[in-house]
Image (cartoon, rainbow, N blue to C red):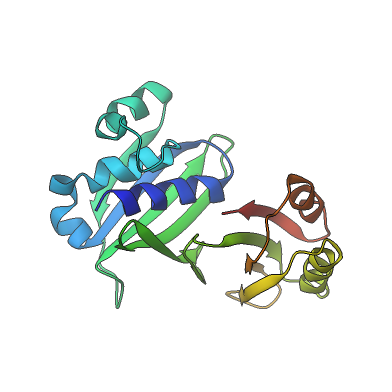
Length: 199
């Protein structure tokens, strides 16, 4: 109830792309029932602060959040058909950027991220994974995948999610290779790209 929770929090922080200033953390199932006793709440906040599961500061994450200006509140939520160890994180970054992430701790410190900003995704972070948030415009997927092919990065798994045609969409791309900073920067400046994050 802690290792996976830290990873959910740290993954959400990376997806936000900046330091969170405000966080609403909603717990479901056994996370809600036993989260406080098991330290799930402290672990999620620790992840939002950028800590990893082996960080010895996790028990003090609430105090560290206060020192660093991260305001947070913790509550519960009812979700239909969700994994019993699920958390919903609604974040606002220091620049005002907003993000909602739904993630579950699925055992052994492993996680499954199932939603980003209301769009269905499915990734564990066990493989190098590119999360490409973009405007749903013709040619955007081709531009990203063609550039990856040109860079000799092999795609192992690809998923697209969009709530509506022409709105925001997200590509989840698991790759077999390492991803360079240069490739990330090149993808970020392609037309219609909002953000690219490597998990």
